[in-house]
Amino acid sequence: MDEAMVSKLQEGVKVNVVDFIEADEYTVTLKCLIIDNNPRYVFGEGWSTMKWSLDLKEGQQLKLYWDVEDKKFFILNFCYQTIPLMIPV
Image (cartoon, rainbow, N blue to C red):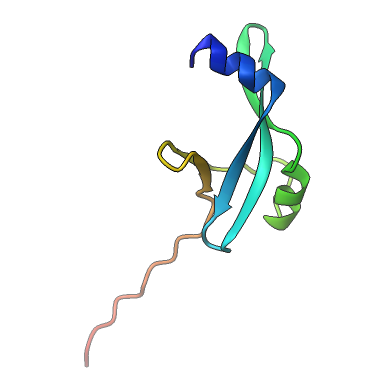
């Protein structure tokens, strides 16, 4: 990521986060904090609403995908279910 983008992120940028399973969309502020010369990305304003709505607990990881074309994050935290094999009798 170039320095201009990191600088912009240090001030905070509003981004959309889509939960397509629940058909919800959240607006949160994405920030970049530089700690020991390493970038750390955190959500600011809007995070509490999203966290409570998703029922996230401390220690859980939020899996996100950044869609470059739509310029949105998509939540990948969903349960996979398999369809049981049905054998005709």
